[in-house]
Length: 337
Ligand code: EPU
Image 1: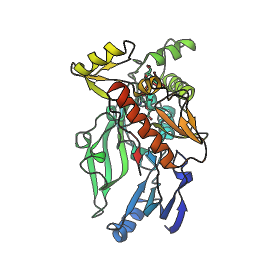
Image 2: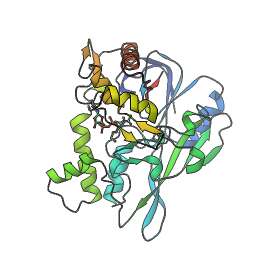
Image 3: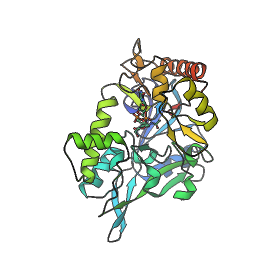
């Protein structure tokens, strides 16, 4: 365990933004984490996982702790289900592949989501009709202040759409070290409510899909719309899909009869922010080395040497334009640092 000064964070964030950390420490075990925290818990700290949901707009004047805890193990099983514990530094998609290899079902719809296990609960990652909360059992987290290891059950986590207690009440107080997930071993319940999944399976003439087929379909859909962060820097959806009231929706639909929508309840309607951004004319727009992805308007991209502030300014311009045109506020999903 070594603390290094002045480290470039470019390789550690999927946006590929080149800012520096004042100091940096790679953490390979819970013991190492406790030891570092004993000395530094009251100093400025910055917890880094997969770096897939952040936009760096400045140097980090703190000690960056890069959580690289590794390991995947079955902790209990019944005839039909299994509980798997994965350490925080495991790459999420590699974990999905491990589960598929063992024929454990439940997270195949979450294939190819960037980021690590430890950050998945923070924003309750979700895609194609499945959210982490659907399979989540509990997680362990180290309290920064006193280094006690605490367990958070599913209800403790207060999960919502891209939300959890780790973004709200206990923000900045804990470091998630592992997550326990419950999966099926047989009679997998497939989630194919998303039309695109069904059509992808049809294109490949798959009539009785397996969890591997669903994963392949999701991978192919994601690859067709979302830029690969290894090629073009990005953080996935930059904004959350806004939820508006039924009354606001009536007004919106009167002005824009083609607006797509998902009913959440009688009172709440979700509108795809990607549609709003596309209507506002931003889709595919490029400015210098940054812009809006040409296949999914919800994704802002760094073509190489963009700065975090250039991307942030674009995001703010998109927000104010959407507000002016549609009278809707869209919230950023990505953490602005
Ligand atoms: N749309 C457009 N133009 C666009 C993009 C989307 O008009 O450029 C409209 C279309 O009507 C489309 C609808 O938006 O049918 C929904 O698009 P999509 O299925 O691509 O999903 P999304 O609502 O844009 C959300 C998640 C994604 C997740 C997909 C699939 C959020 C903020 N984003 O996007 O998550 O992969 O659903 O479930 O909820 C991520 O969080 O990084 C992410 C990629």
